[in-house]
Image (cartoon, rainbow, N blue to C red; front, side, top):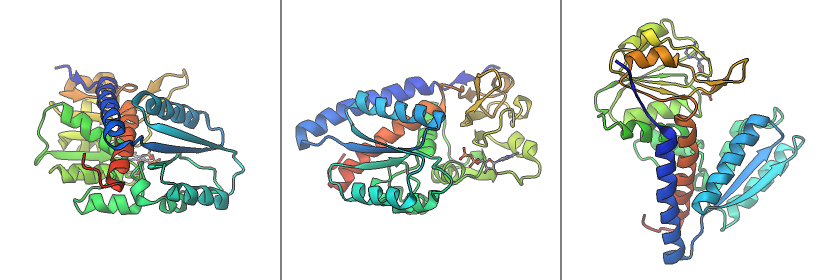
Length: 287
Ligand code: ADP
């Protein structure tokens, strides 16, 4: 069997297209153009690419993006002052701080400084907590994008055994909460997990976010499983690969995401979705 490919690029483009129409409608009916502040500190090349993609997607959909490109030397105090200013700015609906931030800035302090109703990355403990108690507000972009990819397969989730490989705050943990909300029986593996192979072998949905190329072997994949690869790793030769051995995994899986062109574009599309959601719910506009 050869798996069907879940085309994240195509699904993300459709979401952006729908959002473009929605923004036109918001402008017409409510004179509202959602605004996203995009803050980047320092010159990390990968972060620069991600930020450029996010700004381009804003331009395409009609969201007004306001860029803050801050030097590496920016102090935590100055960054928090900027966040405070953006928290109070009525034209700003979403605040995105591109991570990682330099070592002298504490990630969690920055996340907690952002108003939860402008936290379009969905990283604030309030938003993660809402997801945990089945009352999602702004949902973490990458797991939210993965749910849209899973939905696109038309498969049902209820009662399915799902495994998440990787337990990070930004991806693995909210991913587990999303799948739990969708009715899966969820397991989370991480660097201390003893027999990763056995966990993978029994799982019907496998979502991998460990940042380790080749971590999940294709022959471990249960026949008919759905495989979502969130990893993005660059090989010595400059090629982008995920955490799953794609060519061997697709022999067993029913559905699989490619890298690139799987989860990556979805994360940007759900950021746009969250920005519109933040703009409308803050103003009590019904979707
Ligand atoms: P990201 O934010 O992209 O998910 P992190 O580096 O924050 O990346 O997290 C990597 C995650 O992958 C951690 O939760 C870690 O425990 C997990 N991980 C690392 N190695 C393994 C492994 N061999 N098996 C399972 N999980 C692993």
